[in-house]
Image 1 (cartoon, rainbow, N blue to C red):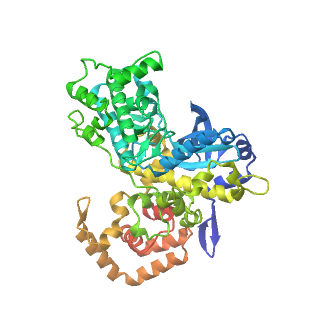
Image 2: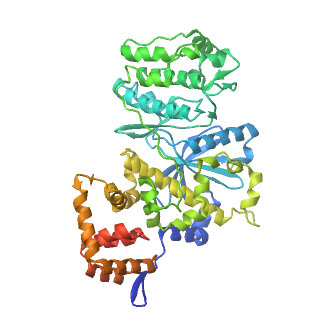
Length: 519
């Protein structure tokens, strides 16, 4: 709503964030959904998309960003100590992982009875279903899929995390054309150095390495490598290398290395499978040897992504491109730097905090006393802080996907994100002030020295107006003052005004910038 204040028109309309918070607090329909566990945090919970031994997975929609997510729901009261430990490891592992081919963790929400793990949603199904329904995958496509999985496992192992349950059921498609897959389900994952001996049997028997049946201990990376060999065989043949109707028979086949590769599989692929499925762990191809094998020689492997770590107090010139984009989109929703600071976003995203007792509290009903009110309900202030963190993580990840041109069915369908992303200046202009200060030579083929000369000339000729303009913006920091903008536009043409704002003024809102450049 535009209100007249001292002769100016001020936009006092509630932001999307304010509207959502008000609905959660006061809207009877929202309150009913919360009681029925159909609304938790900023997520509306939909249909069931998966089920496990201790959990259900449902489709969720983040109400601010309109991003679809997968929400794993667990009944905390029914979790025994062993399951709690596994769950803690899963959350702890996912907190650390930032890779384009690993499912991302956005937020963990807990009530007295339930735990909600909100994650990236890969909408095109799992690898197992694709092969089971459509048959074996041709080697050209298998190379792409396997190279993405290998890059994820290489990143895992370099982060000292062992998955221990690599299988086709845990590989998810976020896009089919072009193909893009994600490794998920870290329920059996564990932090372990390359030489640490483990003794807990994990995973699915058809993917189990021989040492899991033979020895009382094993080294985690070699177990993951064996599973990769089984997975590759399954993709290119459409069947498992070791097949039996009982676990006992399956165990003997695996211990004896009793399998054959069909002749239609290429020689280079056969060589790779045989190099991975070696009975002696230390003899197996390493991840690096797999990546440099003849079969994968032409493939490119993805690098890791930036973590969610973010300090909103940091100077804008020191923020990464991802952080700048994310901050502007958050501001368009009504989430300001002050919101981010008050939500302790630095604390929750700092790697040093990942192993803190906070993670343990997420699965312990006994730890709720410090975040609940006298009626036993989750404290609204605490919940909003968590929801702001979750919103930031989702937007930051969407920005990363967009900047690296990652294709995702859900990303393409998110009209809100695309409209906000496209309204932000293109990436060369986003950092123009920083490049001008550093005397960079050019941007997108344009002559930077020419633009800098025009800027300096403009600054000298209009110094008094520049001081006046900057002072006005500093005084009216948080308001969209339409009349003031019209006055300023009478001083400068479009190019001069936008250059002035980008270089000299820390814009308080995306709306302000959008108005200036579009009118």
